[in-house]
Image (cartoon, rainbow, N blue to C red; front, side, top):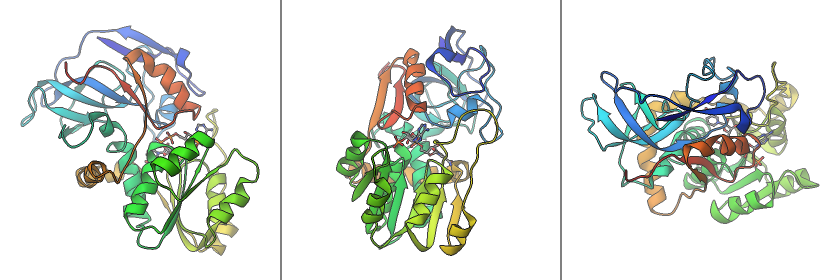
Length: 337
Ligand SMILES: NC(=O)c1ccc[n+]([C@@H]2O[C@H](COP(=O)([O-])OP(=O)(O)OC[C@H]3O[C@@H](n4cnc5c(N)ncnc54)[C@H](OP(=O)(O)O)[C@@H]3O)[C@@H](O)[C@H]2O)c1
């Protein structure tokens, strides 16, 4: 089978040429676990720092040996796990960039293939969707009348966060995104009330105009600088969710993540750091609620999809540049074998 690995250790943002496609033996089914034929592979921003050993203390994959880490949606090819049979569908955060994965007991969730399109389990029903749900419902606890500001709003986390905020009663949802195409997606498909293009002149003035009464919640995906901009257009007692730092420099060494303490005090801000791992026990509850929203058309999503394992490096480079429009997904093999 084929697997994609790093060619060599990295200390900068990865580009497509940093990866090699290897031919290796298909792994054996582990005791108590499953062997999975990977169908959809999720490309996510955390993989960038993870490849450099700068994500949650997790070791980087060994070059020319380990697969690049990544979540998968796949079909069970062999099972030594009670209650799981060949042909079942699963999601796992431990799949990796490869055609088949040996997945240990407890490292996968069984899926109902009728609940939603299968690739949705990589995005809106997968880790990005769970992240959005956790930030909006468990940390910020968005409720009737809130005004919610979200950046990287065209992405799977931001776009889902804004829609869930609306479903939980937010009166106004405003996004920030890069470029007119992304802003159109945010307003026309995700139904935000407004989306401000931060690459256009005078965007901070337009952001203030879009939030005449200030934000009561902000969901931060990009940087400390963006978080401080969000805070500056927020009401006192604002609840802020700090979710991501995609705008931070990928170069080696600690990035400057300065928060303005005076502004935080003046706004009486309540900030919550979000790590999605804490919410894995809620995954089934979240997925059931979100599947219903998808089926009824209340929760929409967009994919930036490519076919074939070998297309993963190029799509990943695009994701690292922030050029993806929607969830980056690789369809590794056909849904029907
Ligand atoms: N805390 C957690 O547990 C957790 C879990 C999942 C995801 N996250 C974080 O949530 C955020 C959104 O994730 P996602 O999957 O929805 O990603 P995404 O939105 O598809 O991609 C990240 C977006 O960040 C924006 N961006 C701004 N500056 C950038 C830069 N210098 N380089 C690249 N992108 C830049 C781009 O959107 P614009 O063009 O609109 O600026 C880009 O599309 C990420 O920060 C991710 O790491 C955190």
